[in-house]
Amino acid sequence: MKVKNWEGWEPEWLKLTEHFQSAPGVPGAYIICADHAIQRAVGSDEHGVLTIGESDNLRRRLSAFVRCAKNPGKSGHMAGWRFNYASFEKVFPLETLWVTWYPTVDKAAAYAKEGEMLALYLAEHYELPPLNYKFNWPKLEA
Image 1: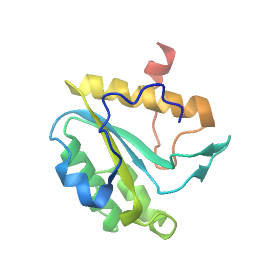
Image 2: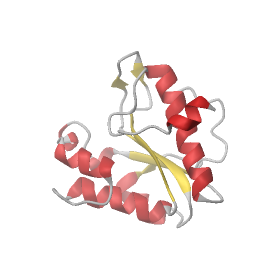
Image 3: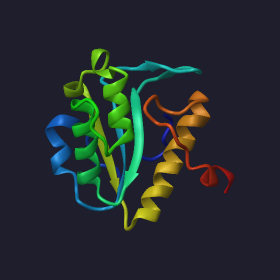
Image 4: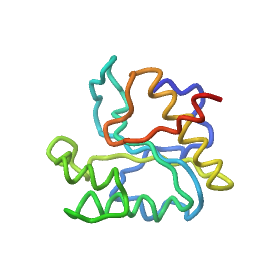
């Protein structure tokens, strides 16, 4: 994903399973990535982005992803549920995933940042990340 400026994102990519509980309990956007590139409809995603999301509470949302990814049938995070249901663990072991987040002032700003990142991904690969199923279409039209 060709991001012109990563300013404002957590300065380092962190191991998801080791650091999801240290995410701030504030609104923001987040990106969960594999530890290797992923072939996409157009090109290769060198970051291995699996999902881009947003929340009014980053810590709670990332905890929900991990809970759903680890436990069959758990609800509360659709990307985590899809990770488990589709057996992503076979190709992308949960312990190898990385996360970064972008704290925002409110949920509306988090939603806008998620939309911006999804638009960048879509423009480059002509599809959404593998665990995303929705796109902030109004942001695209603006």
